[in-house]
Length: 540
Image (cartoon, rainbow, N blue to C red; front, side, top):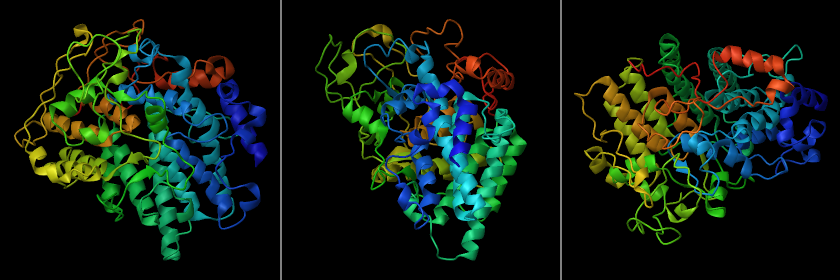
């Protein structure tokens, strides 16, 4: 098995692994420092569960491979998807001139690809091989679900990926994003069947529970609901480009008899309790002081007087460096993307409330309600769009402990606020939309979709990868454009960034794979090229 894993890492990643490790020590680096020691792995399913724990820690990446567990997440997600989604910004000196202003830092934009293929996909491959060869169908089924949960995030950010052929000795050929999505649906179907069959034959046996750091109930039932909800998420993702397939997958979701993640009962989040996992966003925020509210999120949450605002962010301190145009102490004040300043005067603006002990949210029941609302709006189901829109808002407010304000919020006709920069008025910008929380049955489907996705975006916080994907797919919420665009023409300011580039070192380390990826992408390897499901706004 060790030789197999070394082969995979060396063949697929090549020189890319030099970002964080050496291929000749891959097995050592790819050992979770918080997992089960080798002499304990033969007991109580340990050798089957240890790989799944690596995977669970690697989706919202904080996998301990021995070289620090928080800075990789910062460059993998926080300085990319988290910012492009409109959630966060960092005010550290020097960061404004890079990804924020579309002058993409190749090392940062490559890191999600490099670390996932260098550490997490080998653990997935190893888990699939081991559990299939030795006959542990429930572990294999969960591995397949985790594989999709991991890799659709990579595919959604880069486009074409190596998925079905990962680890093949005949060549790790990439596949188009469309083919990858079809493979995701197949793997989810297979995973569901494996778990369902195991449960039917072994009623009451929850052999995976001791390794489960993702579900709230630690039951196979919740894993099945997660898989079914994930299938719904991916079905809606392709609805603008492959409506027939999307509708068919939605039908499978409802016909399965499994159900979905339910409010109050379920939650998919990497647990920080007794798992050896610490929320990396929390360390970047509480430890380093580098996670601030994005101006776009300020606009929506302040404009709506949203009851989740104090749950998401702390008020601004106010005093500090720079000459303030108006007092901000006690208010919620954010940072606009692309302002490209050389100072760090925004360091007393509103920071996130996420801490190292906050569970890392990956999928919520609220998101599922909004997915069902959109599916109904598109005619894919018999659900009522308004009902599930309001259920989504209710589920999110309940999740954050402010459900008592539900009725006021659902009847609110408040709109997003204009943004005023605390230091320089040239960065001010008017709100991009007048969408309200209150549902209006007389609205067009497009307007209804904007309302659904805007609230879904608020509810998905703080998971920026999903929020960014949905914003690109639908155009909602309407985010502020970058103030300064230093992409040298590769990214249109109005269209905004569409993807992360493949690692440039692939061009020299594995030119055949790189050329195939570009061919499948169908455009330049830059941040302005759209991926398969991202078509110019054509929601209906």
